[in-house]
Length: 241
Image (cartoon, rainbow, N blue to C red):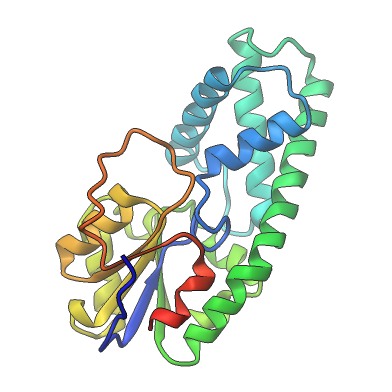
């Protein structure tokens, strides 16, 4: 389903899973690096550790505003591996844990830099024609990350969950994004990889939506008639606008 979008004045981007991985859920990216570096743990145990880590990051201020994305990846992977060690699912000492955490974090950071060679030009191209706003569930340091990756100047406003106190899938966070735009909701296109956290709440607000469909977390109820367009690569987007 690839129809042209007309009368769009502004674009709201999701960040994680969209700009940084181009449709791959971060759990899948991390797991691929665990496998690449032969971290001796099964996928189900990793998924438990991933969920534990994400909940811990949402609850406690491990991530500071000055942390770049490599810092975040190190914090994530250490939380995951320490959890696995405590659960006796990763039998290794602190030195080995640190080495594996560094290997996975370094590989993930390189992966994002590679993906950005595709996605950054898309953001730059759209910024020439549209007002761009970022709406993201993040840890309070998204501006540092955008600056680190050469993306900050493309966005006129940023709505970050930890700053505004609202998280996706609450439609209110997308309402904030639309208000930052200053346009009517149906003049705004929302681009994101999560069907339940991006597409559904953005539609609830009245925006048009482009679903970046890819390697998700699983378990979502999907209605492919809901998005205005479905893409599988962010590079497909400019031709539709």
